View 1 (tube, rainbow, N blue to C red):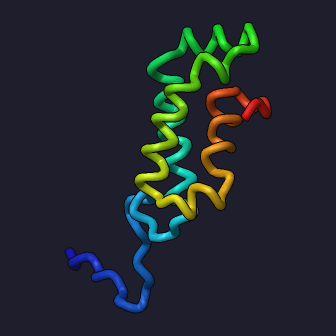
View 2: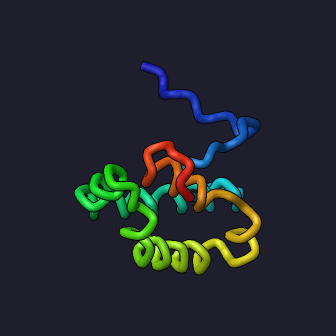
Length: 101
């Protein structure tokens, strides 16, 4: 039986882990969604209550503030403030697609 062919050195290598992608915008988007997804995962009843009563912003005010601080620390203030990634994640993930943030 013949040995498997070695990969061609002319073929560009793909990043195996997408979180290691060098694109700062893509990294910021993923981080924002991960941080906001954690809020939903840790507080599902609080989220449901906030959506039902229209108090989502108030209920999650402190949690959002802490997550945003972490986001800024990891992506940098300039990128955080110049892109809608964190706000988009809040609307898409926490608010279930509603434009509340």
